[in-house]
Length: 413
Ligand code: FNR
Image 1 (cartoon, rainbow, N blue to C red):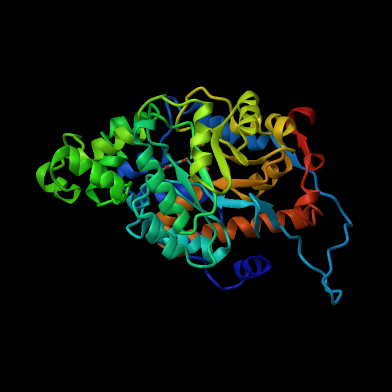
Image 2 (cartoon, helix red, strand yellow):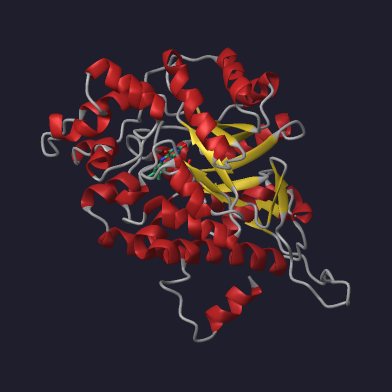
């Protein structure tokens, strides 16, 4: 990251700016109106999103001075290090790429490019169930050294066979942890997508996405029910993009994955029986649910409100983080997302107790702006800012990054 910083100072030009606040603005004109609406859009009036972003400026980092640097074996001074252990895996930085669906919408290189870029920086990549590239192809792009985790949109219990098939595929392809998203059993009320008549599944279907269509169990069930192969679907049921109708396969898949609220905490057992690795529940916002997660014996949670895309009028995710950490932080890994936009935001979330921070929209803006190189630039910039921000504050390792380094702005004046 020191290298990133010095190359930023010299003539080695980045593909686009290092100014994190500019990425969103730059991405807008390179995306179609509906793709922009999908990534930037939020639930309802956007109040959860607005609060997510604003919450970070409610805290300030108080730097320490004359802190001697770490030294290597030869006595050379070292930069701060942001390495950590999350879900039993060693990470160089406390960040991961959040699961984001249908990435080919933003750049035709899609998940392949993003997962390759993540591996090249040493950042774990979480693949969405709503991916536009198959589980296996993303694993191949992410490569042998890549760290990858699989996010599940959990099919209805009558489709346990499909769930098992997806879990087995992910396990076989080297995804080591399972992230189960609990806040999206239906898609949120998203005015931008409704105004644009935009359904990512419809659009995704047109560009030939995975979204589970390659799953052998889903395919054979589809064939049994409809009497023809899923690949024939586009021909048999031409998609009416303007009219907004979904293809049969997309309709079926949506029914499988977004079936309403049919599961309870008892159902987690089923996933534990079929996944032999860490399980992380994504979308926790209450202390009570965090305690339930401990009770059912999962290894982690993500304190997340889906970036404000599901519940309008919701609590800012960062506000719940310290409360949840106080309740369960000793027992399970508490991860965090929603609203992280720069390195300082990551430092603040870690100081409030997050073991690892998922970054959503920023790397997708990078994907839109520059494909693989764009994602690499975003991740490199964030990692560089984290390490530089720690170094400047006299924080040598993540152990030093705790609540003592923060003040609440409301207490300052
Ligand atoms: C998401 N998110 C998401 N989460 C998930 O579990 N599965 C998914 O398929 C998606 N898809 C998705 C698409 C798009 C376009 C966005 C912006 C987000 C939510 C994501 O994982 C994460 O929780 C948020 O993006 C975090 O908020 P920020 O970083 O975008 O503010």
